[in-house]
Image (tube, rainbow, N blue to C red; front, side, top):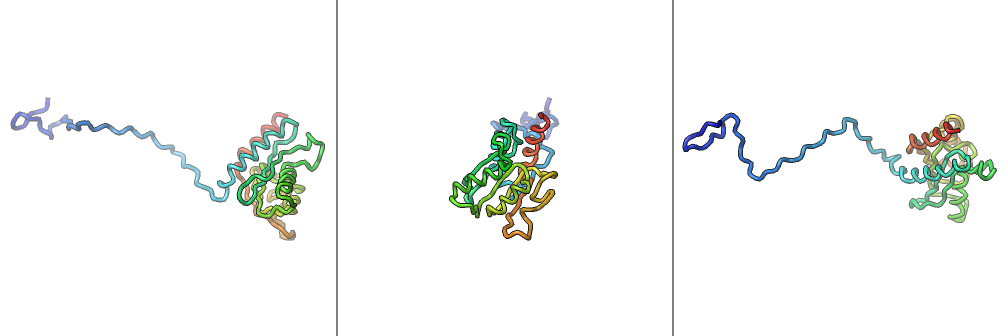
Length: 193
């Protein structure tokens, strides 16, 4: 029992005294924060995540014909999709039917000429030498790719055709956009075979 002070009122300093809070509500408890730090924003790669997801969707169409799941998207300078493609070598019997080449062809038709100045090519797998040559010749400004290709990559892994200083056009190259997702798609495809 709380001892009473003068006049019979309870003393505020008495042990066990709970002050009157009126209608005051107790704030909800905050859940503990995630101990893992959030990934820092990446101004170089983050802008390309959404269009790379589009390239991944395109890649997902390839295995239905037995083709390796690689997808590509060509964007205009304002971000409009000009062309898309996925590997179709098995489907068409055409050795040049790589995702990048098909996307570049479609984009050139949309633009009305072979020069794709101001455009960006996104592809889920690092381009091979054939595709790297087509990229340089198409004059795209930028190449963005997901997974590296240590066995046949020609944009920095095995060769660097795209940025070869001896050529008259060298697009900017941005690597590693959704790399884990792009690599997983390929790994799953080859494990299932």
